[in-house]
Image 1 (cartoon, rainbow, N blue to C red):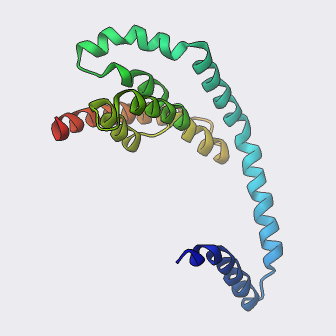
Image 2: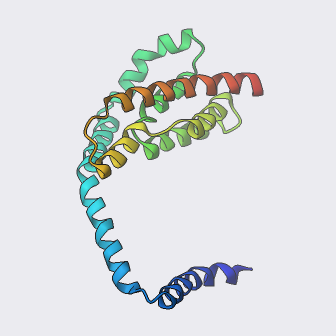
Length: 173
């Protein structure tokens, strides 16, 4: 069975080349044109990605996320929002990998079967990295006016996080 995985990709490539030959298509030329188009897309989205990565790094290394978490903790504790989730909620709309690091920290500290572990798992699956996604897709398409998209996506993220907590409380506790 493990041999299938070993031969699958070369077989797919061979089938594509064979199909192109049957259709009398310049497969290599089509490949290089596709590679050039892909590089143009990378060139178009690179500035947005670089700015986003720098902003995430600055937020994490400066302690801004912890400062905001400490400031928000009295409010979140009063409404029953688990305080370990505050840094995750702040970073989730910005960075998938950064929020995954916070989720891993929650799993390590409280366990994956704790309320915080289950809630962060549900939130990971029901929310989106809003700023990352809009930066990539809108930079690639050249769209400039994204203000309504950001507003709607952040509202959707907020409600997804609230519903995640409600579902977690109803289903597990």
